[in-house]
Amino acid sequence: MKKFMMIFVIVAFASLALATTIYDIQYTEEAGPDGDYPSPLLDQEVTVTGIVAGANYGSDGKFFLTDPEGGAWHGIYVYYFEEPYVQLGDEVEVTGTVAEYYGLTELSYCTVNVLSSGNPVPAPSQVTALDLLVPAQAEMWEGCLVQIDNVTVTEVQDDYGQWYVEDTTGECQIDDGFFYLDSVDPAIVIEAGMTWGRIIGCVDYSYSEFSINPRTPEDLIEELGTDETDLNLTVELGNNYPNPFNPTTTISYSLVNDAAVELSVYNARGQKIDTLVNGTQTAGTHNVVWNGTDDRGVTVTSGVYYYKIKSGKFTSTKKMILLK
Image (cartoon, rainbow, N blue to C red; front, side, top):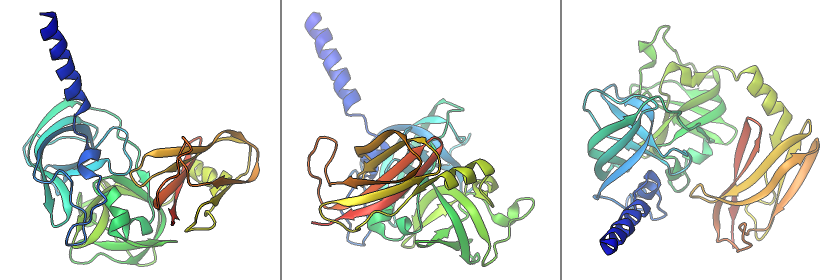
């Protein structure tokens, strides 16, 4: 009996350890023949648990699911039509087949079990237009909830509801997957040259372009609030130099006042690999050198990395490239 119980416990723990996550489905560095990045679990049936980050996509029940921690590689599109539809903040268990629909990774032919409701949705990840331009860089944001700040409209809506904005890094597409801009009251009219303080939405992929899909009109923010503006004025994250670099680069940031600061480095998977600063810093400009190693002192490989500063509610992330 004791031997049976021990075997049961071992099997149970092994099952937990092997539980599939959205990250497991999405993360890949292998490009497919069409230049997109198919899931390593393609055509497999999986069961995942996550939080609904975007509900009723296409007005017919499809939705976006995220791992509870959010971030790069942690979101996925769920092709699902069964009523009653899931709601934003639902924790759900999804069983379905991993599929690629013209390059968009999705869970299809699904059964969905709502475990709980009213859960907090992970905060959107900060991206730039450049982050969504090249598939090798943009793939990590597919299916994720993101935000882009301080953009200007460069192209108005076309016949498919798509329009374009630019920030200081380039241009990206905004789409109407969740709602039509002329269906709300008052209707939202996009004009060339208009500015938005922030656009939040879920990222999909169609016709070789990544798009941000606002979930409701509230995801289109004309101006950042006073608190956010004050934060942006009190903390400034500079560009690292040199970039690309080998083997070291200098990251600079400025504080108007003394503040608690965390400055960390993340790999392309969205995993934190090194913490450069973690504590109270004095007002002024600070320069920190990253030597291309992780927190264990192990030299990392060539590739794209991200450095992120957090101070109170303020966060900002920028990209750097290590070339050897």
